[in-house]
Image (cartoon, rainbow, N blue to C red; front, side, top):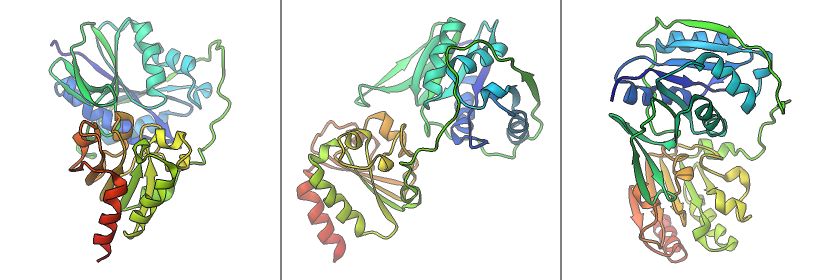
Length: 318
């Protein structure tokens, strides 16, 4: 495929460039054949962050600055980005597969008349790979349009080492506020974040496959065997009311990186797996031999957790 320019739409959280944005630089290497991407950073007072990113990575950065961009708003952000990309005829536009990314990506794709490929976790010469059908299968896509908008799963690509190049250029574009049907007036920090999950060396997590709420006690008993442990859950198990939403792990919850992650009755949808890519070792317990989680696990146990976990606890206590 002909070499195409690469543009990254960066995100900030609490005033800092997100880890997912740095990982997009790794994706850019995979599709950009070594060329440096241009990073666009929309937001209020984004110039300083854009300059720091340029100095740290060597990339050219563009601060799309405006007071109305303090918080993410789909129409406002898409208009700000299009201020720079309007007239684009070829290239990659890359976003993290976050709540902002998967809202903004299709907006940009429509305006750019581009392909839109979401939840990508692999890339090669002219193709993109992603999980489909809750991770049971994989799909490879060869986009045919000259402009391609992509969202990349967090943790799928490694962020390049920092400090190697320090000659990036950056500029500022002041974006005027246009007419919008809605306006974001603030963002509140979620109360369901559990710091114990972030600090835990061992996480025991449950999904819908644990069967019933009463079986949560088994997971808690197993976690108690280990020091610095915590109990987490998949989104579906939280939605059933079996766990607190602060325990949710995955795209819409926390991303964790324990030494040991024990997945109990979790199917392995990519939304959950993307949150555990940092785990050093993954053990999956599931009765379904075709469960997608087995593709991500280092150790796979096909057994009813109600049978297996008490035996495991007994052995660990010896």
